[in-house]
Image (cartoon, rainbow, N blue to C red; front, side, top):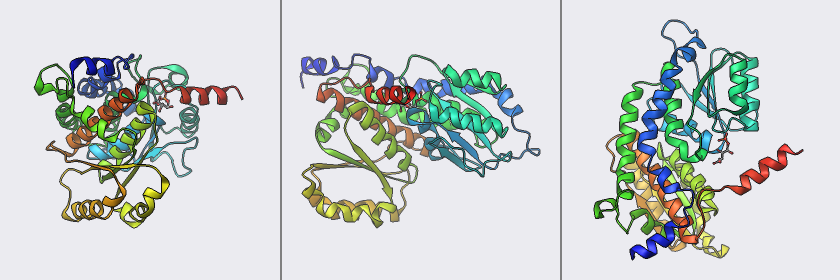
Length: 360
Ligand code: PA5
């Protein structure tokens, strides 16, 4: 590809989503540092027996703000279950044995505000993670710790700082081991991909960014992303990024469960009239059983799909592999938008819906 052609593609990235992706390695430690500033207040919220951790860490958040809840147990060694709540209601079973974190980039998300209120009523909130908005106002009024996010980003582009902040809250509550190490590993993994897409020399992708080449193969196909173990969360992140950045449908699933249902669905995939692409996210240290399922499934569905891209992690840790595979999805989804000639950043439909709901 000539530089001119790459430049004409990049011209669609008016709000610089590629630039935002390149900040992932610095976002991760920044998030941890932001949580450290609220550490004392977070710990004050939890008066367990000496050394005891909460029974569960419940993380309420939607969309780009909710993804940290999935990534936390995927990437970090957690000592208590991390439960993602993506809706209006805190589960009935949440009591003072548990701790709740509410994450909303804007601080204005209806579902997260509803959960926050229920958590305040039960006196179980450990912290909120937000740029401000009503969530910060309510947290201040209720004397709840606030981990402040940097403003001016798209929530989904703030995934690094949100993850780092959530990890820091979990660390303050004793729910994770060695948060600093997890961040270092995640930075090493994400940098493997970011470094190939920044700078101008051939070692940085030059005018042939690898994610652009993958996006060319996936363009105008319905993408199904399959993960396993820690890459299940990443498959869902890929799906959301393809939805929001590339503005096309995308589906996510996970091994071994997909071998018990989705596998059959491929038999008549071509009858739908769509052309299909499979993205396989191999987990770090995949067991022989899981690798065999990826291999056998790939062979069984070969007739139904036009493109099959397999991503093997190069990172040498689980946290690293999680963020390496995540960065591939971020970059590929951005290039998919640019190939379509659209700006990856705006998510007008989400704002239309929120506006209509607010007007009711
Ligand atoms: O990417 C987006 O803009 C959405 O997925 C938002 O993150 C989601 O609507 C929730 O909003 P907020 O992150 O402000 O709580």
